[in-house]
Length: 313
Image (cartoon, rainbow, N blue to C red):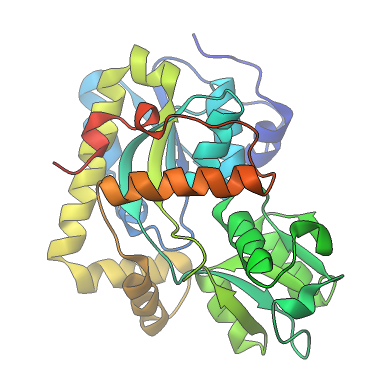
């Protein structure tokens, strides 16, 4: 049986004091941002529910935006599948002894992650020295910030980095409480529309790799759950490929944005169902960068955290 008492963080995220998990429920995170179209299609079309039904499983969706928090929930047993995590969070979790396994690829959205300065604020990454920057720690956005600072002869110690989830970081930027925020996708577009300035995207700094993940425990004890989840993920990807216009419209509706902006995010996302050898190499490079810049303490074997079915054949 899974743990009945949730961690404090996860309980808060679910919006109630207590939630219960059991072996008849597949708990999966629902991560819409930056523009995770496979996840949106999977949920809106009940694809996972259809795959889970023959196994006698119900499906429970949990909205979580942070990869680091998803890793915590996988570790506690309150989450069975992380619908979308960035590999930076996956690597950091494994580096701290939390075995998070990659079960499928999602996208490589280089242009959707950005460091954004407030209206009439700093004009460059160098200008962030001594300034307050908000964003989610332990994520690809965190890595992007560190990489941008290093490129400009600075370090994370040269800014006041404040931990905030994406919605809070966006609000703090809007209200002028911070000088810059780490944002993604629709929030970047909305911030620009309000006069904010994109200082840099992840392009040329970090290669964001979004994946679907699970805990080592679930992978070993419930391989049928993993198989069902990957099947639903594959169905979503196939439907998107055949129905792109309808898929983009669905994404726009769920995200509350225009068709034009949704199409822009679709083009930025570079969707994939699997990861490849270049992604493995990139993750190895990410590890060395994060260790060098005090984002990770321990090296790990990347090949050991990727399921064979997650790789391109």
